[in-house]
Image (tube, rainbow over all chains, first blue to last red):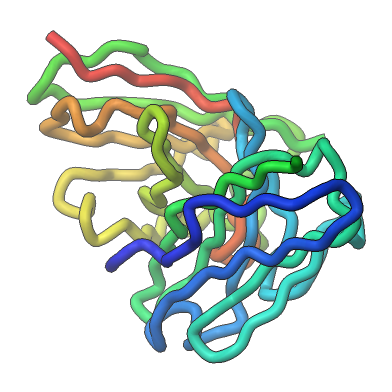
Length: 110
Length: 119
């Protein structure tokens, strides 16, 4: 299985909104409503920000939202803050009952 | 408050077997609601799923690692383990254990442990 495709980097200014895409296939992203997003700061373990395409775990800011259309999922962060600067990874369940991650996107807050 | 902690050798020789244990506190791994998983991250690179195990012992593995990986449970110690055989330098990574909710998303994660493959 191939890794999901994410842009290598995105950037935005404080207060702005950004969107990170995650493109897969009909065997993963397009197959189910099982896409999740993780935030990882340097030297830290990843933290789930979105699960099942558009659900936020308790404690995650409502500035984070998710969506999906066809084989592409998206993470949107509104009202960018300096603390949002991190690496972001998408993940999807697949039709083979396995999991696949995206290559990761580095978010820079200008 | 659920916590996971990885443990094991930080250095493994090429062609040998990498063995790691994840100790779970704050919940029982026999809890039928969750799966338990391993994920790794080579230095400077992205996350890669290794595999999951359910409390019944059913396992799911990454196709690229399936021939070399074994994940098992030790319910008496509330631990689950990873074994990766015939390692090479490409297996050098930070290895994370995590609880998998509904098989497909991980929360929480352990802090991770760096395993270096070198002679």
